[in-house]
Length: 254
Length: 159
Image (cartoon, chains in turn brown, yellow):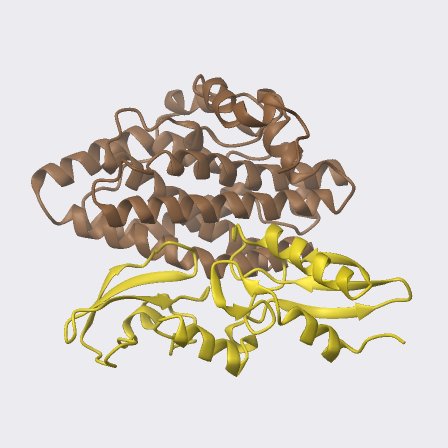
C-alpha cells in the first residue's frame, strides 16, 4: 500500500518541485517587475507545496523532504515532462501558457484529492487550494489580457499552446498501478481528471481561439513513462543545477 | 508544576514573526494545539502559507524559548490544517495595522473580492489600484492609493 501511496504523492510533489524550479528561473528576467515578483512568489509556493507533500511520506517513515528533493537519481523522479521543459529563450508567452495549463490541472487534482479517502492528502489539498486561487487568478487574468491584445501576443500564445499541448495532455498519463490507487479512493482515474481539466480550460481557450484538437498519438509517444521514471532530455541538467549546493556537502545543517 | 497553555502562550508571545516583527507568532494565529506532557511540551505550528520560509526559524525560536523556561519541546508543523485569519488575535490585527498593512476585509474565499475590498492604510481612501497580487512575501499584495499617492501592502491571507 505504501508503495502505491508513494507513487501518487511523488507524482504530485515532483511536479510541484520542478515547476517551482522553472518558475524561479524568471527571477530577474520578468518582462515587468510585477511579473518577476509573481513568478518568484508562485515558485516559492509550489516549492513549499512539494515539501508538504514529501512530508506526508516522511510521516510514514519514508525519506525526508530534503532527501526526496536533493538526493534522488533522475530515474527516481516522477514528474511530468511539461514541468521539465526549460524556459528556452525566455519567451514569456510560453512560460505563461505552461503556468496556465499546469495550474488548471493542479486545481482539478487538488479538488479531487480534497474529496479523496486519504485524510492527510485531503487535508493538505484543502489548504493548498486556498493558496492556489491566487495562482489561478494570475494565470487566467494574463491569458485573457494578452489573447485579446495585439496580434503578436495572440500568435505567441498560439505557438506556445501548440508546442505545449501534448506535454500538458500527458500531465494525466495514468499512474503505475492506477487501478489500485483509484480503488483505494485516493484520487479518480487520470482519464476522468483530464476530462475535468478540459472542461475548465475549454471556455477560455475556445473564445480566445486558442483551443487545439486532441494531440496526435505520435506526439504523445515520446512523452510516455514519465510517471515510471523516464525523464526528458532536459532533466539531467536541471537536477545537476538544483542539487549543486546540497551535493557539495551532503547532510550539511544550515 | 506543569505550565498551563495560557502561560505557554504568554512565553511564546515574545517571539516575533520574522517577516512582520510587529506581530508575535501567537497573535498571528500560527500556534495551534499545545500539549503539556510529563517531560516535554508539544506545540502545533500552522504556517500561513505552506511555502513560508520563516517556519524553520520559528520552530527553532519556539524550542529555544521553551528551553529558557526549562522545557524540552517538540514542534510539529501542521500542513494539513489550514491557517485561519480568524485565529489572528485583536493584538495581531493591531500589530499588522501598525506595521503599515492594509487589513483584509473579505473572507468569503473569493480572491478577487478580497483584493477589490481594500482601503489605503494611510488615508482610508478606497480609490486604490492593485499593482501586484504578489509581494515581497506570500502573504502580501501591493497597491497604490490614488488619493494620497501612497504605495502600500495588503496583508493577504490564503483565501
